[in-house]
Length: 380
Image 1 (cartoon, rainbow, N blue to C red):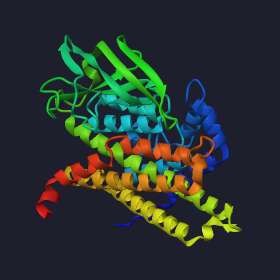
Image 2: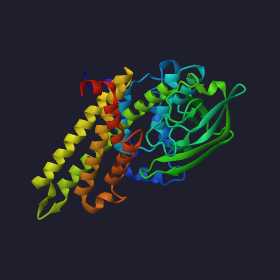
Image 3: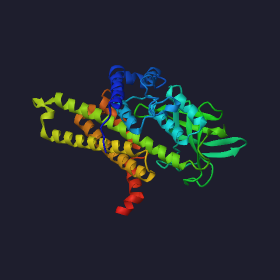
Image 4: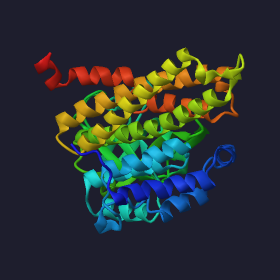
């Protein structure tokens, strides 16, 4: 398998990195996350201008029809720069629309490509942890459409979205995979309440409550009661993008730690001269490179066979989660007490890595999912 990026892919990544380094430095980011909005309209406009919003959208809807490998490069740079704009949430929502298809989805994808529509995925519920099939939110048929009731928790960038992708149960028991339906719900629909807040890593999330929210039949994505396959595939796509973002964050925290060891002196010499610390840096490097390899493999396989997709994505998410924990902890320890201060970018990278691990299943969850796959049992 060829993991060499082509010239066009590299140009995308280089353009994004130049913008982050020039206009989205650490001090600028701190101003953004402490602002009332928590995100920057100017930064969003730049992402749109650079073509990042159009990248994953099909050509028929004004996009570039980019693959997960294309998005991998983008997410790495966003992770390296700790960018807090709702790019991930919008791209994930766009992937739901792509998988479902239909005229309504295509019209929304055109808005995504132009940067005029931000999306959020309202999937998780209280007590469900990482099980996206554990859904109490109900959708009942009513007239020419549906009425949705329920509450969704930790909706990433829910407060910034113009529309939500909502999972709801239209049939079956609470944890069944059958009977799940997916809907597009406007954020300003009557009955929708959004409580926005800042998360520990500087991102934004929200609790989204839906009370007797009426939506037309056209709001349904795919077939009623048959949304699990789309939900499962989109969640794996989201996990793949997060793996790429984590690699970018680990690259940044590794580079910062290496620079610190070269400049911090103790006993009359840079502490990077001490062999014990060199060994720890070598271990960090190995973890980062293994995580990078698994993220690239997941990006290459996420669009293929469902069984192989689940196996590969879970292997990647588990390995990346383990690497993120190790690299983050080592970086904090090697920086000393200042490694956990708000003034140091490394501390923010570690917080983001911790949140990435907890999103769409942590390392333990995906290790269990990997073991549960038929191919693992066949070869065990």
